Image 1 (cartoon, rainbow, N blue to C red):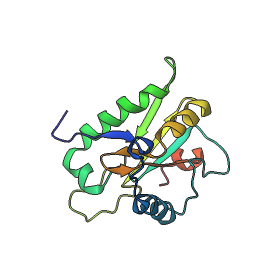
Image 2: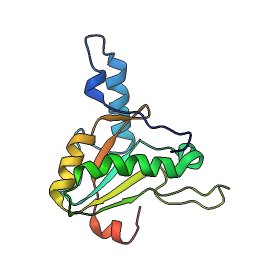
Image 3: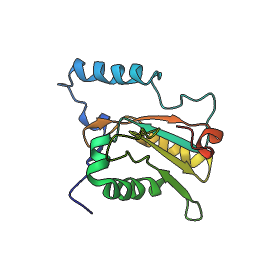
Image 4: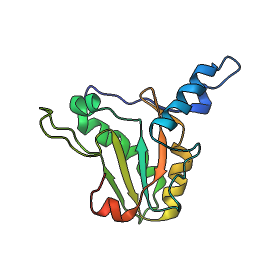
Length: 149
């Protein structure tokens, strides 16, 4: 692993009697930025593909893409069955900012089954990744296969 370490925890671990209203407000603000409703299933139906928002930044990807990829892959493989595959896609930004890469800042995961994706969505929604609250939604397979982000 490189110099980048990703700290992962669930938001409920942070909640206690002194949990500030401002934190709840910031989560609602994030949902509105991405035009999502509370909860993790924002697609009309569940699919084997998840989209994770608000866990990586352009800057962190430029700093240590490989470590981020490895850390996320290790975390996500926990949700697959032994004979199942996992396709992790993290769009990588251009270093010179001359080319706009669609999907930068988002993470896409294709699981072997809808059940695996649903279990991962349930576990990942609201978790804190390196200080950022994870927002999870199902993603249309046809868009994923065509790399439309």
